Image (cartoon, rainbow, N blue to C red; front, side):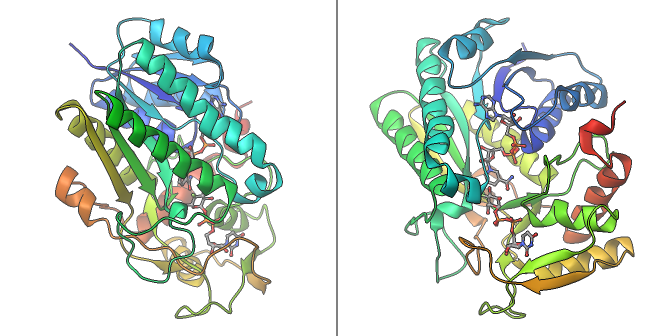
Amino acid sequence: MARRVLITGGAGFIGSHTALVLLEQGYELVVLDNFDNSSPEALKRVKTLANSNALELVEGDVRDLDAVNRAFDRGGPVDGVIHFAGLKAVAESVANPLHYWDVNLNGSRVLATAMEQHQCRTLVFSSTSTVYGEPEVFPLHEEMPTAPVHPYAQTKLAVEQMLSALCRSGDWRVACLRYFNPVGAHPSGRIGEDPLGTPNNLFPFITQVAAGRRDKLRIFGQDYSTHDGTGIRDYLHVMDLAEAHSVTLDHLFHSTAPHQLTLNIGTGCGLSVLDVVRGFEKATGLPIPYEVVARRPGDVPKLEGCPQKAKDILGWSAKRDLAQMCRDGWTWQQANPLGYRSVP
Ligand code: NAD
Ligand code: UFG
């Protein structure tokens, strides 16, 4: 019988790509999303791409226990949960910390409560490489100290700690995946990243400059101690990240409880902002005009993780290179100039 998985935030950027991978593998899915930062159109397209109807939607907030219970009670018993629903904008978390603690921590607490009530204790949680703070030694290993410097990362680390406590207290199987920087889109160009308003993140900003929606990229600082002075991040293709969720779930389903994992999910290869700009120009043949402006408050010079533990434990490693991230991101941008709102 097909396993049934609840995906919170399944209509979002990473959630929609993961939902597609899982549907293609024959899972039955229930998505809980309040569409705070996404569109139901993404889920329609996921079903079409997978040629499957095994995805049910419960529209609701992960902080609302009744809504989460409705998702659990829709159809057969849920075997495992992937928890994407949350907020992710660093500057917004500094401006409105209580909202981040509410959605990210309280939402996770409510979800875990419903999981206990339904005796479903298998969970993959979206954590972030920003829990390492402003490290000085690279590459980053999971055992290195965490020192988050903004409320967004602090809420994610707090959830990791809450989940560790659950694993110590009972039969939970939990994986906290510390993502580096997911970019790109499904190669079909049917699903992708759809930021509302001006993008915060580098990659969607670049594709909107390429499309002529923005005049130029503003590079936040060229005075970091990196090879060209611009910030370094570990960018990975969102399809590689989606596949990481599928192998993680599989690993948890085959593990004996209690079981807890914390894994870096990245390529292990850091790229500067200028490396990405040049890579995009090379992959697409399009110029990306830019100017260098002041550093963005809260940015760290470099984040680059070692993904060896994920390879050893899951057999997972990123397969797609920067050129593919750029090509697929550009295909999505061209086909959907206004994101999912391009639909009449
Ligand atoms: P996203 O905003 O595209 O997806 C999040 C989804 O959760 C959206 O569909 C949104 O509508 C939904 N959501 C938000 N609040 C909700 C609530 N209260 N109840 C129900 N649904 C809610 O973001 P994403 O890039 O897909 O990120 C997914 C997860 O991964 C987030 O938890 C994020 O913090 C984490 N993460 C993202 C990145 C990244 O660079 N994209 C990196 C590290 C970690
Ligand atoms: N950058 C620019 N110009 C822009 C946008 C970004 O120069 O318009 C630079 C930033 O200064 C940084 C790099 O591009 O050096 C990457 O910035 P992003 O905003 O794309 O990504 P961050 O690393 O700041 O943060 C992202 C997500 C977080 C997530 C983190 C994981 O926003 O939610 O990746 O590493 F946790």
